[in-house]
Image 1 (cartoon, rainbow, N blue to C red):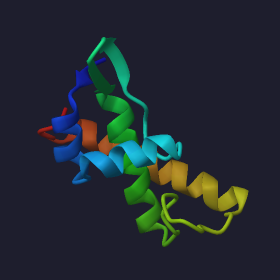
Image 2: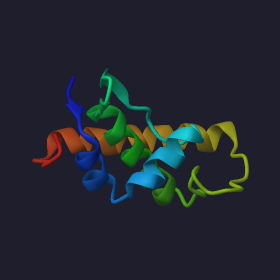
Image 3: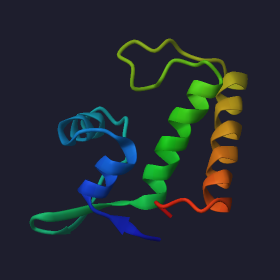
Image 4: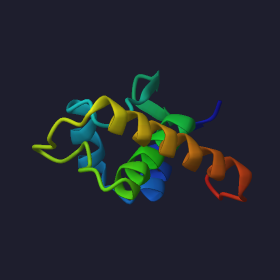
Length: 100
């Protein structure tokens, strides 16, 4: 398990600092791990899983869960999203990904 700093999270996701913290406050992004009084980091695999989930939702033509009013999805569609996410995560691990 690897912890990564905010700067790397921002590079991996292409999100800005304020967007990351807003998504965290809305329970739409992995929470950071406190390392000290003024230091924190993210679990790399949680960030990669979040990215893979966004890709899976896109690939299955689902609204992104970070959208303000994403309609509920059926259990079968949810299962498809998770299967697609798992496939993408598997590809991350099998390729020479610079973030792993």
